[in-house]
Length: 330
Image (cartoon, rainbow, N blue to C red):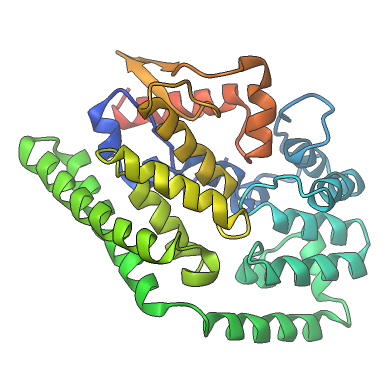
C-alpha cells in the first residue's frame, strides 16, 4: 500500500489523547478509499470487497485489481446511477474503468458530470498515469472536454467565499500545529494549548454555522469544507453544537459534504448522548487493545458502512491497530 499521504483515523473515544491527535490521525478512511491510494496499488492488487460478490465500491476495486475493467465500470455505474454512495475520490475510478473498457464517450460524459459536481480531481484527471485515463487523453474530444471543464471550474471558483475559505484553512492549520506539538510532548502546557485552539475554533465555527449554515464545498471549496469538519470533530466540549452542525451537514446533502464525514460526526454525537453509535467509527482502548464502542444493529453495520463510503469494519479495525501501534512505537 503506498501510504505517502497516510492518515489514520484514531477516533478512539475514551482516551483524552485521541481528541488531541492531528488531522493526519483522523482521516485514514479518507486515504484508504481515495483514488490516489486505489490507483497507486499494483495492477494486480487485490482489495477485499465489503461482501463477497456484492456489487459495491469495494467489489469494483477487486475488479480493477484484476484488470477486469468491464465489471469495474458496470459495478460503479450501477452505484452512481442509483445514487449509491461512492467514497470521496472514488468517482475517478468510474472514469478510469469506463475508459479502460473502451467506452470513451461514456467516460468523457462521466468526467464532465463528475467534474461539475466537484467529485473528480482535475489534476488527477489530467495527469494520472493509468491505462484508461491515457486512452481517454488520446481521444479527439479530450481537448474540448478539458477546456469546458476548466472554464466551468474557473466560473465556480469566482463564487467561492475566499475570505471564509482562508479563515477555515488558517484555523485548521492552527488546530494541526497544536496537535503536532502535543504528539511530540504530551505535557500539561501542550494539552492546554490544544484546548485554547479548540475553544477559539469552536466559538468561531459556531458563529458561522448559526449565521450561514454549514460551509460546504460550493461555498468554500473541497479543502476548506474538510477543514470545517476537522474543527467540528474537535468541538467535543460542546455536544449541543456538534448536534447542530450534524443537522446542518445532513441538510446540505452529499454534494456538499462527504457522507463519511457525516458518519464520523453522527457516531460522536450519538455516543456523547449516551446512545450506541451507528457506523462503527469509534473505538476505545484497553492497554494495547482497541474495542469497538457500543454499536446499534450489528447485523446491519456492514451495509451502513458501505453506504457511507467506509471500509469493512475488520479492515478498519486492523488499520487502527496498526496506526495505534506505530504511534506508540510498538
